Length: 332
Image 1 (tube, one colour):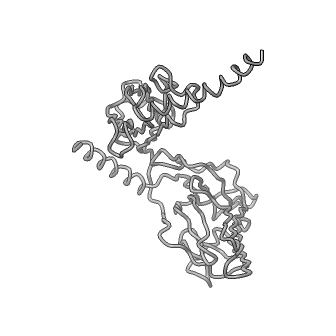
Image 2 (image 1 turned 30 degrees about the vertical axis):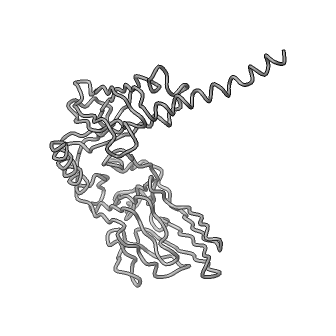
Image 3 (image 1 turned 90 degrees about the vertical axis):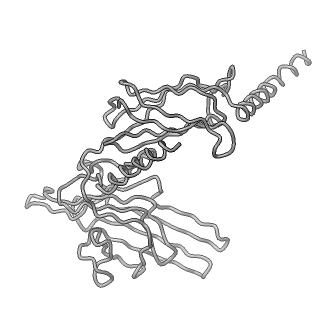
């Protein structure tokens, strides 16, 4: 009985070793994959004749891959069959749409077993790529984080003008208190400091912002429009701490997040909202040391009561990128 129990106890360990050997072999020599790529638009409708381009890795070097190239059928589908050592990457594009891509890592699969009969599991999987249409791109006031913004004063509320992208007088050229910012700094020594950035829209009725996740795979990473019925929060707090041991603690708007904001609100005599401006603050919204801050990308719609957030500059960039991709594929 003891011998049987011992034999049974080592079976799981042997199974794990065998599975690891199988994955290692597939990673070195490749295993078969079969994936159906389904391309749909923002409303979930199939996109026919979408161009697909990508590759299946076949080795460790950057040039070790098998090309994926083709167009979707009338159902918006395209079948990928081949051998792969690590991951598949594929991009979908079509005139009038924002390109989008996705990546599937077979080494990170949660399937058990990960490889069966020389095939990565799950074999015959389906993946959906959302290809967003260019609906109504409009000119927006946009800023990128080329430079940080200096903090003119600590431990005090400061008005910031989104349109001018500057603090209001007497600390800058701004005219409208679109948001109030306060930077509280505690610096016990040159090697450590503790900083808090408070963001407040409390100076205006119905003003505020709500947080969303970016669509990382798409060239249009944000929503088309602001949701006027969204839950607009009026207060946000971000923190940064750096101790003597050089370790840092961040609490900030992350690079995969963004805020849709509403400001410059006007109400009628009954307190009903009748006018506002909308825009986007894209993360990272971060500290630039104890004396400044930076926003990765900022966008302000200068037209009152226009909830559109689809920037014409981003649409032009997407069209140019598609033209470049077509040229590159022709020369491959």
